[in-house]
Length: 125
Image 1 (cartoon, rainbow, N blue to C red):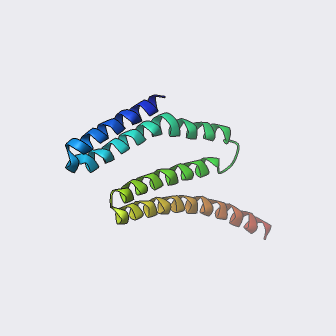
Image 2 (tube, helix red, strand yellow):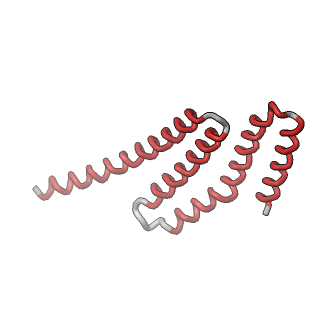
């Protein structure tokens, strides 16, 4: 409920600022968006990720999957915010960078598995 109240107050402030100080509206709306996102992240997303990690602790790659999905979601949100404020190129660049970071993490995990498989195959030979 607290998040809804905060979002409504931010919306009212943004509407007021849009009518009073139109040139600063875009800047302040981005600041409010990040403030609201940080509130949502700390109160909803972070506890959800922690709970998912605790529930799926017995699975070998659960942590990597949950963290990759969370990072993808955050990157998509930031990219969407940039695109909405006419920074389409920068939004695409941020989203591509997030995907590259996720890919690099999974390549590192995949290389560890390949080394184990290689070691097993060398013992068999």
